[in-house]
Image (tube, rainbow, N blue to C red; front, side, top):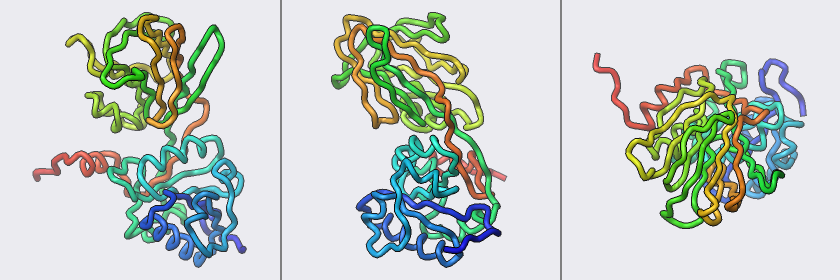
Length: 296
């Protein structure tokens, strides 16, 4: 297949929600029109299962960064999060087509996808990097489990609506002990997700900070705290809790036993996000959260 040297992105990977009819239609349109532009198209292996008759080469999600310089994720924010945790490991830019609900991370309109994507391919785009969190469960002095999150890491009970006790340290400085349903540790990207529902602040993506949001705390004096993103958090559950759980982006779930400790810090790799030239974070907030527009 011939390359298109005039394009900023000439090798594009396509991936999306498996077994979703609207997503399948968007993926087929993208493949057809990108090939017509002379773009080298590859399809993520699981995505290829829903694209009967595709002639494009297929690779696993972990391999996409070796064969493409732009990944187009079709779906909702959940699909973007799942793909991004893997794609951040390679030098590949990522852009999303919104086939979900809110779509804070997926910019492109599926009904105008090529009209919006063509300028991006030609080099008219905004670029930004979002950091991730790494969460580790330490047991008997050794790392037992590890997970990554783009939105948030949550310490919570294994039972529904069950209060737990734990201590929070920031860079070995004791912050507080708390009785609550758990704690949400969110990135700026995740500040508009679960953290927002828990009463946490919205952080613009360029801020190097984390929010610590208690979940239904047992005291009215407990409030969200914003800390430096480069700090290391230590969460020490009380031995009286029983088994707890640690969730990353609501997806990966790790067991936390009474004597375990949890360490959370910034992950070494970042997610490279691409936006159309007219992208505005505050416009996204207004549209998604129903904020008012200008009065004059």
